[in-house]
Amino acid sequence: MIEVFLEDLEPGQIFSSGTVRVEAEEIIGFAGRYDPQLFHLSEATAKNTFFRGLAASGWHTAALTMKLLVESDFKPAGGLIGASLEDLRWPRPVRPGDELKINVEIL
Image (cartoon, rainbow, N blue to C red):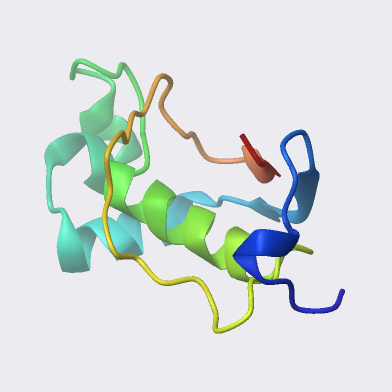
């Protein structure tokens, strides 16, 4: 896709990404380095936590989302700049075997 400028975007446009599959080893590796909480570090230990099983760190999920966004067909001229973050939510845990995909809708 050709890079677009903000003035080229129109409400209702949708841009999609490919998918990424999340594996247990990646969840544990990321957590061990950046978010070492029990529910991210061991499937066995995670069974006795709030999540009742291994769950990816929200920050791992955010990083994967950024990767999908950069590799998507949404290519603003000058790149994707993280100037602010107003609303970030994790409504469901990401589990081993989950596949993630993003859709960007211009509002």
